[in-house]
Length: 271
Image (cartoon, rainbow, N blue to C red; front, side, top):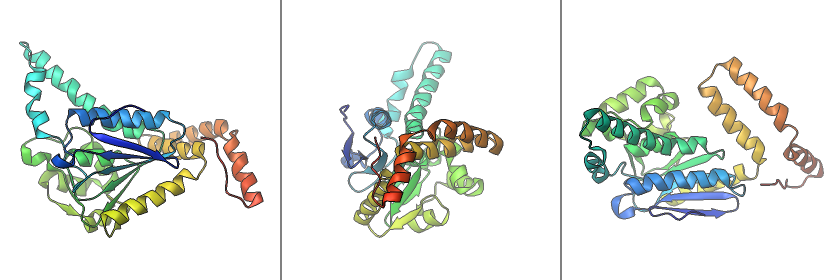
């Protein structure tokens, strides 16, 4: 397992738990955390034992968003005597940050985001990449970038409208207003609201355990098909689905699911 500076990664019962771990900074996302997030989900993707992942935050908040000290340090990092190269250096950094969050989507295993307290700015970008989002009743959300004079640039404006609708996404991005847990459920940003952070962790882990008990290849296929359908026509999605199942219906998982059902026993799938 890789080592991490700003997140923790625990694996038990086929479930990986990635925890943002800068509680003294409200889990503000500095450069080390961006790198750790990508490394963690690359490891999860590549590890057969892991079938599902939970993403949560340590301390009082899920995340306060991008670390402003990191942003303030970008000037020296990108500076070049050529203005064009300075701009290209910044563009490459933005693309790299985008790629970090996309690692959650590229991960073949479902990712469940469990949000308590603040989820601000880059935190919205992050959870939009998860397969499902859940929150505690103390959670609140804000697309804060507009209040510091910038356009959100690592995924919120591309992914959030597909989750909650374009009109609501525009309102939240234009105003940076806070969305509490009840409204987050109402606008379908989260699937469910739990009564406390403790109930959130227990409830999301129960959902993850249910997923982990299913056929791993079939779960990966569901994620792949839904993700593919988002960016393609229905006809293209159906064609890809047929091609996928033409290969995957030969798997031992299907046989095990059928045999365990006939024998009235829990299935025992390979990782």
